[in-house]
Length: 115
Length: 135
Image (cartoon, each protein chain N blue to C red):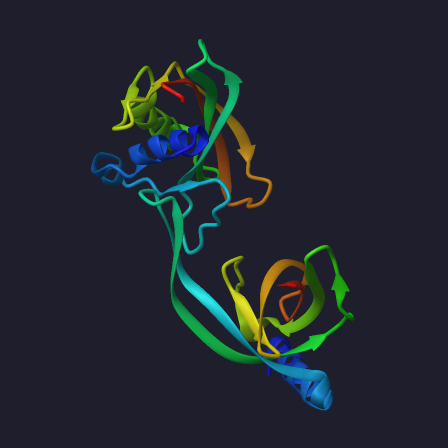
């Protein structure tokens, strides 16, 4: 077994052992994004949803008009994220900010929700 | 339509033309994040930064970042700059709103390897303009 596979398996086990601390969410990914110069707007199509689990690392931080959280996700499950993707968590839509850390196995990402 | 949106719309119309699309150069505006693209594209930024020649005009500059694959020399970027010149340098755009965007001479220079993506080399194509007929 390769080290990569071994680490991914241990990671899956760690998320399992965390029980309800690892919360299920839906990641909505846009695989096709283009810009329409006629109407000057971004066109996103081909939503692909996948169920995954996250670990909420920090408590909510409220800024002027939005709430911010820091979350941990399994890198291989989520693939590459873009600014057009979003999360559905606790029946609410969270936009994805810049990744804080990404070591190829775990992604530490800031997410935001409008208040 | 306001003067800034009008200007943007006029310049964008150029990059929405059949002729430009046939050039097969991936083109995006600023504040757009392209995904799943090859190592060649351009990004357009329109900066209406200056006063015009009279009350009914304004001036500015269009900055176009030209990205090509790193390590392959400047030839392809220079070719793209020449293609841009064919559409912009000393050309005028007239729209149905009776306003005219008049471009001047361009400049072009290398900015080295892109700091966000080392697979890309970035070149800077700039061209000043005057925009006449502003209400």
